[in-house]
Length: 262
Ligand SMILES: C[S@@+](CC[C@H](N)C(=O)[O-])C[C@H]1O[C@@H](n2cnc3c(N)ncnc32)[C@H](O)[C@@H]1O
Image (cartoon, helix red, strand yellow):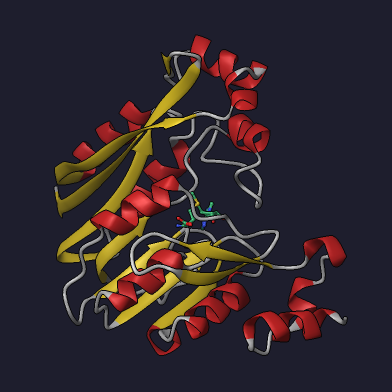
């Protein structure tokens, strides 16, 4: 079967074959989202982040009032942008550095009947947006584990993480989000013990007046990653924190609501 034939069969959507010229092994796969508003079919290419437990936690906590404008920075497949639209957002601007985010995101939004209310952009953080664009809600879920750990885990198909401590990119996002958040707006921020979490929370408290924890969860680490040299070095340097329960290694994930410009 031809590449485009394969896509049309799966998604009933005219997917531009030239955009995903990654060879047979790069064929997009179908991912079944079982979190909020699920089950939802999502197209995942070989440069799309696969929705994770953190995605599920953010989705659960996300609050959007009818008619609000949202920005989803680090949108991956677009799943949180789709949920924001389903919650009543008037429009969602969704950005990712993944090279095919516009095509993948659009296909997923079409599939889930919200394509008229989401615009996808490819680029770095808020840079592709119109200079004056502001939003009531920002979903700030950019990659945030140390680069070495990101590459070791294989969780980030676009390669690299959030900097050498996993905090540099989220902090830059928090800084740049200040001029993107309308007054009274809120930002949803995931953090975790697999990054220099305290630096991120300190930055959030310096840049915004209100930082409120919404939820937290202990998540098992895959055994291979738990026993890796990369992880032990980061633990030794005090960048990441791991706990154990029986034979399992666990890390902690948290979701915060950040608001009020200081
Ligand atoms: C943890 S994933 C989350 C994806 C999506 N929100 C989800 O939950 O499925 C982080 C995403 O941020 C993207 N990303 C990393 N650095 C970025 C940057 N500088 N600008 C825009 N997106 C970035 C990655 O490609 C990845 O899709």
